Amino acid sequence: MSMTHEERKKLRKRRQMKTNAVFLGIILLLVGLTVYLFILFPSTHFNQGVIINGLDVSRMSLSKAARLLEQKSLPELKLTVLGREGETLQVDGEDVDFGYAGRSMKEALKTIRKDQGFWSSLGSDESRELEIQPSINTNKLKRLLKGSAIAKADPVEPKDAYISRGEDNGFVIVPEVKGNELVSDDWMAYVEETVLEKLDSRQTEITVTIPDDFYVNTALPADDENLLETLNRLNEVAYHSLSVDMTGVTEKIYLKDVAVIGLDGRYTISEDLLRQRVHQLALDYDTMGCDRTIVLPDHRKITMKGSYEVDTYGFDLNEDQTYEILLNALNENKKKVKAKYYTIGQTRTDDGSLDIGGDYIFVDIDRQKLYAVLDGKLLLSSDLVSGLESDPDRRTPYGIYGIWKMDTACSLVGTEANGTAWDSYVNYWMATDFHGNGLHDAVWREQFGKDIYKTDGSHGCVNLPYETAQLLYYNYNEGSPVLIYRSSQEESGSASGSGASSGNASGS
Image 1: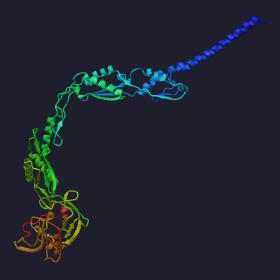
Image 2: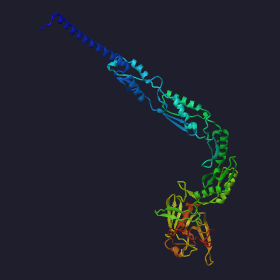
Image 3: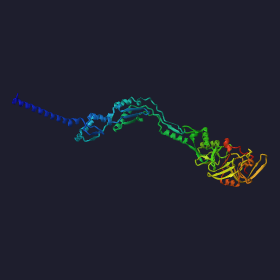
Image 4: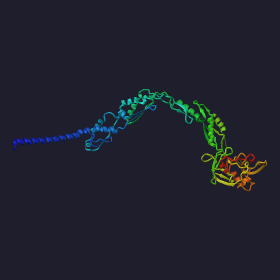
């Protein structure tokens, strides 16, 4: 059935209305989308490419960006509060609501969001900086301080500083114990104020030490002028030194090591301490009777066994006499004295130790040889004849000797065991021990060396060719070491031979 004209007109009208409605809807949708993208979204979100404090907040809502900045931009808070006697309080950020100060982070970000440029909405990067001021809940901090070990510590009584003996026998000040009694609660306000000042300067690792002003201060301090004056006076006494000449080397004797010193500065020399110090000097310097090891020109390494009873070469401190010398010197406030010692030819090597040195005469009884060493080099070697080996009273004693007397053109006299007197003229005489034995020329002999000493030995001296004795006399001095050695010395381990008797030769 066909439609009437009126019906067709109405149908066209309805279709037009639908078309208009769709078109209007599209327009409204576009307007709405435009409003959202250019008005509503930017009011609550950041545009693409926005960077704040180095963090990308593109397309983030203000709330999400605020959480990100609070989490990433605020460092951890580490607060330490120290009391005077070691009491400690450790505070973390969570304990005091550590966070962003002032208005909320979201409100602060709105300022940046409002300043967003049009072009940033089109994707161009925009970098901004936001100052983040940290803060804490001061009420929570106060509660923590009130409950801390600083406020409730066991009482430590103050004690005065005082003078005591130090480890080296000098005097030192033992510091005072200040105690931990607090004057009032004002210290907590000081801690709070200090923490806030540190936070204002962006510091989050904070250590606060409570000053002495907030404590009761009654102990005598270590820097008290009278106490320091007394300390200086005592140490002037304690460190008074006496220089002791030890064969060319100076040793220091300090009063503090050998005296009992009172806090009034008065002192008494301790006999035990002074004798111990003198004995230590003897241990450090005495070489009389000590073993000596040398390397001969023929490269033999020889150890000479020392004997305190026989040897004449070395240093021997007289402890009793040195004690008296030091005691008197200390009581009389002297500055320098010389120790009492016996020494013949004691020398000092390059390393500073007391020893034989590079000048010596070595006599080998078994080989009947003499080696003269000068400046470490062989001066001469020579055959010799020592004391009659078969007669203990005439056998040349071994030992470490020093030439204690030198003479020329003299007579050596003595008596035989049967009472017969003898008298031998020598040109060069070098005495080595105190029993009449020594080195000298023997012009009456035609031969030296080999086994002559076993059947025709001397009365105990070392007989030498004229030229050898002459060279020794003019190249060595009183004090020069003479080492008389035999292999049995090392084998037996004894200190020395029997020595010559008073009936042997003696220098005229």
